[in-house]
Length: 242
Ligand code: MG
Ligand code: MG
Image 1 (cartoon, protein in one colour):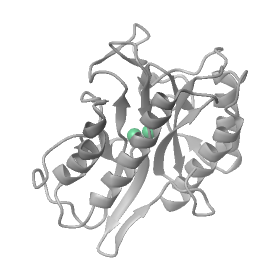
Image 2: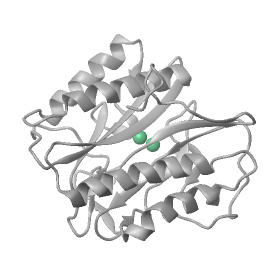
Image 3: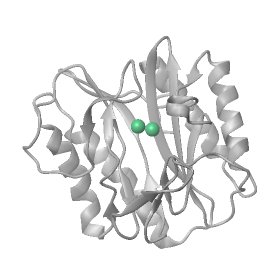
Image 4: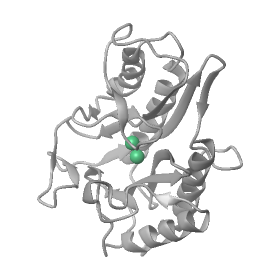
């Protein structure tokens, strides 16, 4: 999982540097697939429940599960890039939200707080803590900013499969839920809206958008929790965040 995860991190790093004005979402998807296959991996999302691409690319008011298409990035956009890699039967899953500068201060803060909430969730993930502690840490980081937190989609176990038990909500009460066991691997992925919580899925059956049309940010890491602490599995191969 560490090796699969490093390919995810390196893919996201490459995509962050590519994601400038004028680049199409399809070009990002093609580059990701070529990179992943070049490393001996397989893009986990491609064909997953019929998903047609290697990346989920969700622009501005899109929250998650956007399908790469011919749209081109323009100044002021934010884009959630979600990437899964399967290597030797093990899965890594992570996401970043990138900005096409210049973006508004309001949206910049949204992206920063979303990233902070992910790190707060990771810090709460300890053997013997409760699953609700993770959601409470994420929610506690987000709520003071009066942002919306998506409730219909959440983090998840990850390992042999992209989505395993348990579900990991991005909200909750500290001290509630099952105890976290040594050896659990989880993908934590806060989805945070500049407006309200509510989202819906478009007629394409995939793309999730905010009901109020306001921007949404999303970031994700796969982590392993053991008695020696928490390890982020989807860092780049040089150990830095993508
Ligand atoms: Mg993901
Ligand atoms: Mg995920």
